[in-house]
Image 1 (cartoon, rainbow, N blue to C red):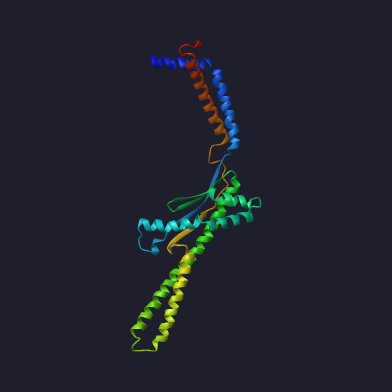
Image 2 (cartoon, rainbow, N blue to C red):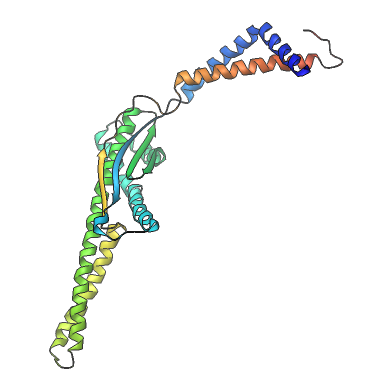
Length: 269
């Protein structure tokens, strides 16, 4: 009962001091308006890739194997050389872009989100037109690098099949060596060829960047210029400041009343 009376008393006091609440609300709204210039709205856009594994070309994989294969793809998309290529593409098309600023900030503005087979190359920033250009430059650079690496992965795989055939011939000739000494020259040639192919395969694997040959990918959506911010707008910040001010004003009224009502103090209500 006493608590109910106390709450009613506080509400009555706040209503009587409404002008203080209004003043704090206005001050909060002004503070929110000012902060909206210090912290401008952040926009977000993305390009989209359809990414997956072609199981018609391979046996079923474990979840770990799938994650590992797709992790290699993500490594390419987020690699420094892809970002550098994206920056080059961007600066060639956007005359107002500052090279040094982009080099410093590009990676801090991007986020790769994997939503099943839908991979979103997200870019955040204050300039909606610029981030759309950044997202498309990043997607173009990623697509070029993925196709290049994929071609090398296919070449490495092709060389492995050729090497397997050569090794079979070598094993056969070695079993015939004692009966046909003329095969020795051919054996030496094959051993030299195998050594050269081993080296070539390693080079192709490195250039293939660990991509699997049963990878499937396609750049399906270009980034669009966002029409609205991803974070709160200026109006939202003003409203938040207003509500915070009203709350602070109400608390200040209650606090000062408590101080005045302490024993030994002159009570004014």
